[in-house]
Image (cartoon, rainbow, N blue to C red; front, side, top):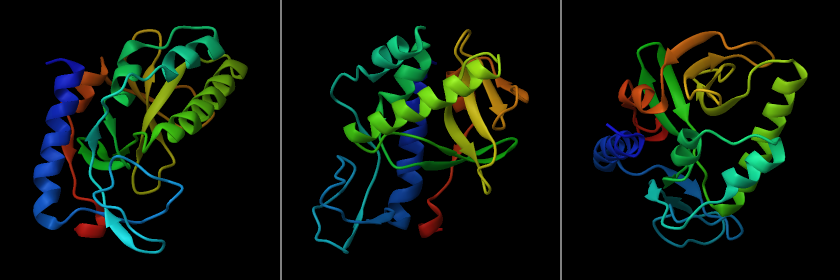
Amino acid sequence: MTLEAQLDRFIHQYKELQEPLGWPLLPWEAEWQSPCLMEEGRGGKEVGWRPVAIDTPINMFERLGEALDTPIHTDLATYYSCYWSDPIYAEHPDGELTLLFAWNPEEFERLRANLIGHALNKRRARQPLTLFFACTEPDGEEFISLMNEDGSIWLEAPGKKPLRHLADNLAEFLAQLKPLAHPSTR
């Protein structure tokens, strides 16, 4: 199954799980809008959100590759370019994690800055380039990254070499996941 198909499968399963429980709520903020919001609110009001397919081209990864002077693996660009969403919780055979997504176009710029910072730390430590897309739960002290050179998926800790190989590619990793309901609706 392709990466896009695995991601679509996962998001569909998440929506089937979450919808009967009610969509997670976030405080509505006029300056932090997203296609994920299910209604327009007023300051302080909580509104529901759900993942929504991105329907416009995203060029952030080309610019990220230019900033790092290396092409970014297409799997990472594909992953982040498919859905707008707040983080989504999931279960992996090794434990719980949170998949990261962009909430809106402005968040892509934050993501780009964070990925550049991560990449520069890797470069200073003379470690291979990895790019994160998930955090472990409940503490978030470890994260899950894609090895830019070959697309393999690794468990990492800040400042250390990759700790453990988890999958040969992102599609294989997503196939191992089971979505979990948002903690606020469990």
